[in-house]
Amino acid sequence: MGQGPLSGLKIVEFAGIGPGPFCGMLLSDLGADVVRIDRKGQGRGAPSDVTSRGRRSVALDLKTPEAVETCLKLMERADAIIEGFRPGVMERLGLGPDLALKRNPNLVYGRMTGWGQTGPYAQAAGHDMNYIAITGALHAIGTQDKPVPPLNLVGDFGGGALYLAFGVLAGVIQARETGRGQVVDCAMSDGAASLMAMFYGFKGAGGWKEERRSNLLDGGAHFYDTYQCSDGKWVSIGSIEPQFYALLLEKTGIDDPDFQRQHDRTMWPALREKLAAVIARKTRDEWTEIMGGTDVCFAPVLDLDEAPKHPHNAARQTFVEIAGVVQPAPAPRFSATPGAIQGPPPAIGAHDREALTDWGFSDADIGALKSAGALA
Image 1 (spheres, helix red, strand yellow):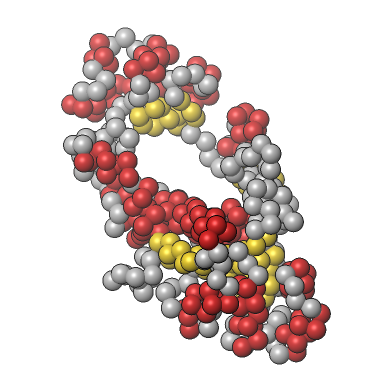
Image 2: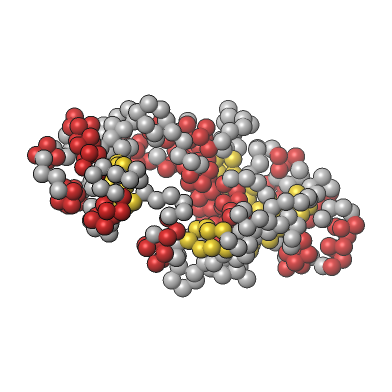
């Protein structure tokens, strides 16, 4: 049994890339027993494959009927499955939701795609940037000159994996109450649109301009932006509320009366230049000493080497090191049933016998699968 609030939950994950593995990691970190179905072959299992951690891998040749039947039997014993293929692929494999739900009416069938199971783009290839482009999110992020992809945090992980985990768990709760499973159609484009709810609200209230870096939270305001210090490093300042803004002026020693016009948008470009000139007089560490941990709403901009060493992250053990690889610890945190990394990233097929045995397959069943060439 895994450690965490999802201990006892049984998930079948069909191996994929991006948001699928990240969703599997989230569920495993909170204690779910996640068995990943991999294709037969070598690979994976490197300590750096962080989003594959905590699962057990069973390697099957899905071109064989024996392997397909094994997957269906696993689905019979699962609370949920997650898959990230294009629409129709699972159906062609003989593993679609109609068959799965017939075998297990309680099953929650989680489907992760970029565009969703339906719609004009449903069968088109894409990546994070494309999925968030049609939601308004990408247009709103970047410099005045161009939109800038925000890594793959908004589509793949925010709009995809997190919504899939949320949807699967909501489906499991419903299934346990009603005895009825269902399909969760999780599209990264839908999730990214959902993440934009507040900004569509701003637009509806007349408080959002379509030009980047002209709004409160997109770097348009001088009091919500990043600034370069004398050592070339950067700090973030988010002094929105008047008391926090007043403290910013105090800590920076600014007494220019123009800064009293905090919310005059016509002043923002000029005030940003003035504030930039002040911040550029000291190093990042000097500003951190002055403003760090205060109500200025300040933090140094850290790189991936620096972030795990920051005193706040270190105190909370936000990062852990496993087999020489620094990586985020499980989140969120639970007082009574804390999550834990359930194990290292598995090599393909590393748990064929162990996982299948735990899920109710006999030695004879496993031997037959090997004889048929269905199991690595």
